[in-house]
Length: 212
Image 1 (cartoon, rainbow, N blue to C red):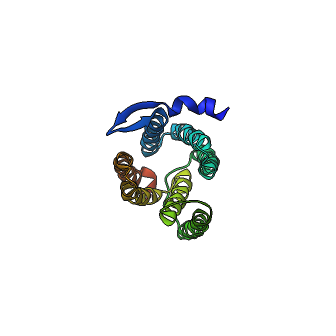
Image 2: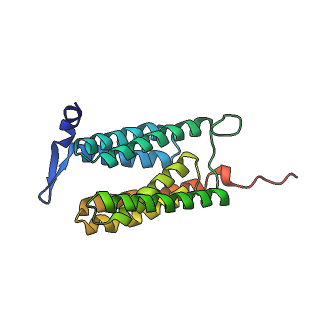
Image 3: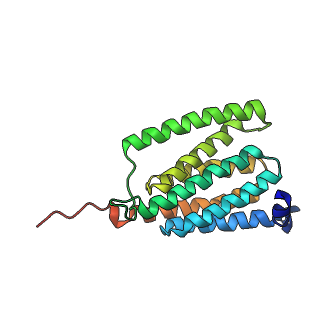
């Protein structure tokens, strides 16, 4: 059943440098770029497009027997639904949520979560997989989850987490010989920098004017 759904996504769309690129990779990239662009603009549709993006990846991972990666996409879907709800009703009085700064408590929670998740996933990758870069794989995954959570709460500093992830992914993909994918993450990096600048200029972050 899964193979019937994924089959067309695995068909090569084009070949670049002798390496075939599947329709799934193309759709994953396009929906990924569209998602980040919509987040930069604080458009609520980013969550729907993002969920489509992770479902595509989840089906491909499942068909390839990468069950851990496929399971991780479920977490992203749940975070996507949480973010969708938060952006609509997570503000004061169940109103639209506004851009906010990350508090010290939130930073501490995110840091603790990243450290714990990285440690657990590194151990799992070392013990049960043949990953050649278990620590970096675990770290980028943990940071991505933390960034998605911060994004769901409209924390402006979540962009710094995404920028950190991209800066790790670019040389990591180059190390693995995935130069095209590394180049694509340069696009994501540029969008993340644009997102950070745009959210910093958001009126919600400006101090209220003092009464006359």
